[in-house]
Length: 399
Image 1 (cartoon, rainbow, N blue to C red):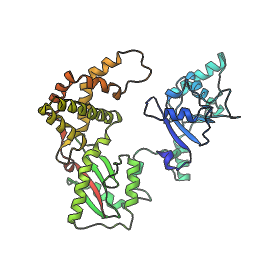
Image 2 (spheres, rainbow, N blue to C red):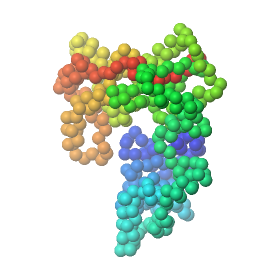
Image 3 (cartoon, rainbow, N blue to C red):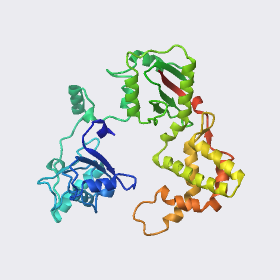
């Protein structure tokens, strides 16, 4: 995301063990036989650290310190090969200050020194890493920060963009106003603000049973919701400049726009789940649809009606029925676990078992699985309070 934000002319390829990643494109782009002259950057997990040839790459960057010398040599060996088209290749190593360095980094250097002294190393290690460093004290850090006025090493935590909305030189809210609100002891159920806009947009802060605030941004009625804090902060900042005016009255048109965004909010919260649970719900839809088609062919109206209602909740829950997505995904994963374990027992697999890999097995287990689905998800569907009752704050842009 950050590389794309810099508008580089290079292709950005993400290669992991997941078959949905750009692994195939990366291998093709970095192959010594490739004729593609387009610059490329590959973001790779250690699943690409051995057994592949990436000679067209001229530099490798270790985003973490390898735990053992073998892994370091394997990584560098992807590009450091006899048939490399480059006269020189570059390997960049992490160099954390002492306070942030991991103990395993020190162990790696010790292992490297041992291997180098006893057997000889297949790769050089920068002298700056091998030599002991001068202690970087707190006073050094304070002096450097005061002289530059920037973040230490350019490193910011995930909430920095959020804090920048209410503090610092570019804050959207005056510091005094913010301090007055955080000291209010009265309980505020919800705060809704309407502002003028060239096209409708919405920002929501909701909460659930865990009471953890969750941010969702909808840049229009139809686009996919944004859930990344950095992206949301930028959208909010762009749309709440000094020229924006508060709308004091709620018109019929404003109510209609708010209702449309509220309907979308229910589905948008599903994107806040972990990737595994989002995928579990996607696969659940596919399997339930297969069961529904089977029930239609058998003319079992009771099963058709029940499965149709369940699919309606999964696809378009609406404002009145709000599933507890976290619990719904967890129950589905518990339900299919026996089939998952049975599939794991089959030998000869060369890659991790994915949820989609057991899709056909689940559909084929309709005779035993359908009754469990009917029992688990139709009588007591996991739900929570409607979305509109869990909104802590929202800002709606009205065109």
